[in-house]
Image (cartoon, rainbow, N blue to C red):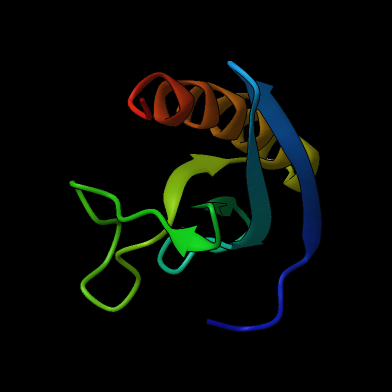
Length: 89
């Protein structure tokens, strides 16, 4: 992947556990002028079960602006981090 256009990271605290997450916005690999995002939870890159392209299995979504992609990525990362915390016992 190329260098990200936008990035954001944070830590979700769930049940006394710190769950770091990171999101990055990239140009969409197929739809020119659009944007997609990648997510990492606990420094592990999440895989898209329905990849946008064979060569970019870690990208999600198709947004018309980088900020829309970033906002969607942050929302999804917080949800996945929360789900990850619930699975740790």
